[in-house]
Image (cartoon, rainbow, N blue to C red; front, side, top):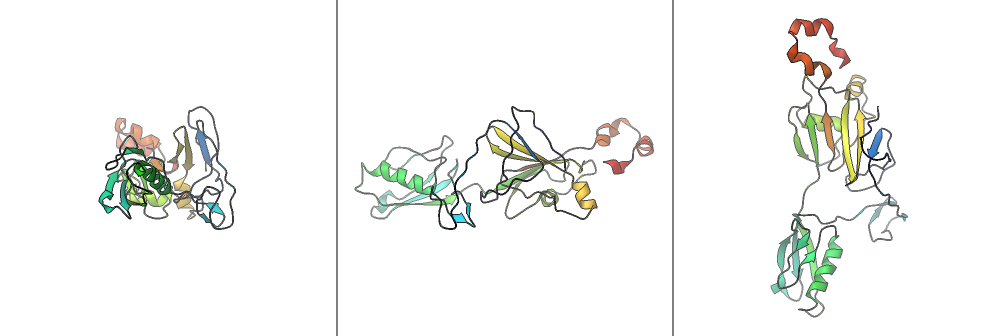
Amino acid sequence: MALLLLPCQSVVSAQEKGLDGEKEPSQPGWTGAGAGSSETTAAKPGGVDGLGNPLLGGERRPLYRLRSSDVLEITFTVSPEFNQMRTVQPDGYVTLKDAEVVFAEGLTLVEFREAVQRAYRGYLHEPQVAVALKEFEHPYFIVGGEVGRPGKYELRSDTTVTEAVQIAGGLTSQAKHSQVVLFRRVNDDLTEARLLNLKKMLKGNSLREDAHLRPGDFVFVPQNAISKIAKFLTRPSVSMYVNSSQF
């Protein structure tokens, strides 16, 4: 496994995150660039942490935070006439019925419910509000480069890089599968990159170093060197001077 250094400001290491946001021990082979910040929270055995997030096996599991285009069902126990379905707008706000707008992007459902209650206190006496998330963007991954069907795919279950490549139609004859790159965005300023040798893993019948995908991951399969110049060469000259096993 090799390292890939992105041309940005500085190099930092970051912990891999699970599909549900769990932090896992740092894995070798990651490089990152940019400015980022680390957050540590003391874990308690079971229950919730100091922020109210549920714990599983001593690890903090962050609650879902609202994003643009999420659809919310807002119901009022005592005043059903105020029940409504609302969508988080591109600017992050939600326009409430007969009340002021509320900023929702980045809030948990509990935080948003509290914001709605505050917004209606001028209209209702001690409003009792319930909020349910009806529609949201499902976790996804993207595969690009030399694969049969490049594109965006829904991440429905635990999926590795080699599995993602197969889901995307497999490698093309021009793929350089010895240098597949897995990009992972940590935040707006930090992107991690991991270089994977799928050729070595598959040839050795060992997927121990195969990386597990996280939501938003981008798998890129580059083009091999010979395919870049093949159009300028005749077919006999390609087979005569190039050993295809090296790609």
